[in-house]
Amino acid sequence: MEPWDSADLDRAAECLARARYVIALTGAGLSVESGIPPFRGPGGLWTRHGEPPLDGYQRFLSDPRRAWEERLNPNGPMRELWEALAAARPNPGHQALVELEELGLLRCTITQNVDDLHRAAGSTRLLEIHGNATLIRCIVCVARFPREGIDFAELPPRCPHCRGILKSDTVSFGEPIPPDVLERCFEEAEQADCMLVAGTSATVYPAAQFPVSIHQRGGDLIEVNPYESDITPLCRVALRGAGGELLPQLVERVRRM
Ligand code: APR
Image (cartoon, rainbow, N blue to C red; front, side, top):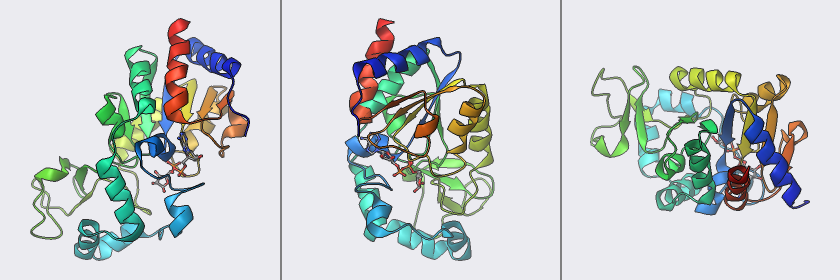
């Protein structure tokens, strides 16, 4: 693994500065320095415990009461994940994306993370394509509510608007991405001519399609990842290192331009 060098950082900053419309795609790797394990690769949750069943949503629909009992009393890898999420705080990688947004350079961040850390760091132009673990969503009217406002005495909890069944806002395996978020992600990806891809293996669709489409349209991809990913061959610049270390340095290079 060739560590990044200064020239790479400059080339990445030049790509960002000359781009017309920059967006970012982030994944679990960006929250590793906040104490949340990734899913794949070294130390990954699925690497250690195996990938979860791909019919998570069908299981929820077939017995939502049981699914909620498991969600409220998690064990194994899901307990590890939810405990890590509860203790996590944004790291310099999250803050660097907020700075790029404040500079007017970063138009939107599409995150696969459900950990709420981008929002906690101050990102405002944010699309959470896999949902947010602090929110609850109605599977009928798609209304979302803060989790702490929901009464779990009766399971499954019901939507205060339409009495539909409420589910965690996090998108389960086998669940379609809520159309309101998915449409906006496609809109942003279609406008972009440069994408910063940080902390993702780029293996899960539809999110993994966005960098490929931007590349196919001649756009630049800048990867920040300690290891190669599925999109590395498509990248204009690949910065091999940790997001919390490299993204703040990238912001500094952009500021100097
Ligand atoms: N900084 C940047 N990248 C890192 C760091 C770090 N400190 N540590 C690890 N990485 C990289 C890994 O090399 C890997 O390529 O982050 C990536 C994490 O990949 P995954 O664990 O596959 O996470 P992600 O791409 O977000 O997974 C997509 O899969 O399981 C589902 O719903 C879940 O949203 C998730 C989706």
